[in-house]
Amino acid sequence: MDFAIPPATAALLDRARAFMRAHVLPAEPIVLAQGVDASADIIAGLRAAARAENLWLPQMATEAGGLGLSLLDHGMLSEVLGASPLGHLACNCQAPDAGNMEILHRYATPAQRERFLEPLLRGEIRSCFAMTEPDTAGSNPTQLACTARLDGDHYVIDGRKWFTTGADGAAFAVVMAVTDPAAEAHRRASMLLVPTDTPGFERVRNVPIFGHAGAGWDSHAELRFVACRVPKDSLLGPTHGGFVIAQERLGPGRIHHCMRWLGICERALAMMATRAVTRELAPGEHLGDKQIVQAWLAECRARIDAARLLVLRTAWLIDQHGFAAARDDISLIKFHVAEVLSEVLDRAIQVHGALGLTDDTVLAFFYTRERGARIYDGPDEVHKVAAARRILARHRPGRAG
Image (cartoon, rainbow, N blue to C red):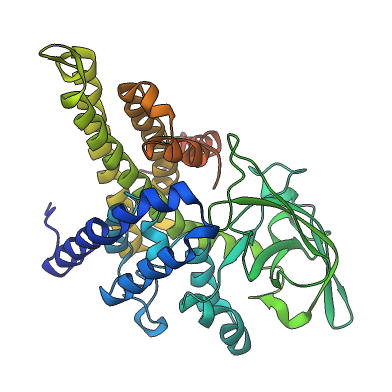
């Protein structure tokens, strides 16, 4: 088994690391301190630098203006960019826009591409993805309650959504709504493109997360749709094809997320090690001299490396054989890497002591924003049960192999 990184990919990763050191990491404390609204010029500068370094749209095909990377190569790049909250944003591959670009590229009509996809690819606008609802279980999207009723040449949308990432300031939403309540569970819903200035579209609030409501791309909104009318040609993809599109969106998204989380883990581990060797407890005695801290460092190193191998193998499997062949692996990486992320961040904060709880380092930002990793895109428990059921099915009596 050859673990060597191809020369072209290695050069891309080196370029990305240099970009992060020269541009993103110096800007990070300024943006996090002064907030999104006051940092528009800084973010625009980072995006211009990413274009100049040929790091723009790594998730997209070359015909869409992207780098045309395999899922495996993009996964490795995503880890590098994930070391800062601004890395993916700088390269226009941040959630939820990256996933929205991918499904628009596949399903959008020419008119939809011109109105929604092209300005998104150019970085002129942002978008959001409205699926999760406050009144139905996010772990069971077949129970969605938000409806889109056909009325002549329009769909009329009524319902509530929340945890709609980046809705604050977004130009449009991809809305998953029930278009046929009587259909079988996975044929009830469709995807609709809804400009956020449409009458009846209301952003109720940015939902506070651990006390932070956030703003712009760093926020999760509650939305309300009240007789929100959009033309029939707002339908994205086939009628009642919402679940198929959602799954196509989530598959590569989980690779992107997991590798981004590993980038966070690497940053946190480096900070933990630096703190351990520089924090003096008494003359000549440092935190790193304590065996428990040494054990934490070794455990985190092993778990990060093991998690990375699992994710990269899953990305390779998808590239070679498609998503169906990697169903188990996608479930495994989702909960495993999320748990590793939680553990590494917790250890890093513990080693930093009271400093780790403050906004004087990036650790508190990562901790409050990324604890949701074990909940969104399917809670850990759902992925564990789904993987276990498939494992059990392969070992039932009478099953060949």
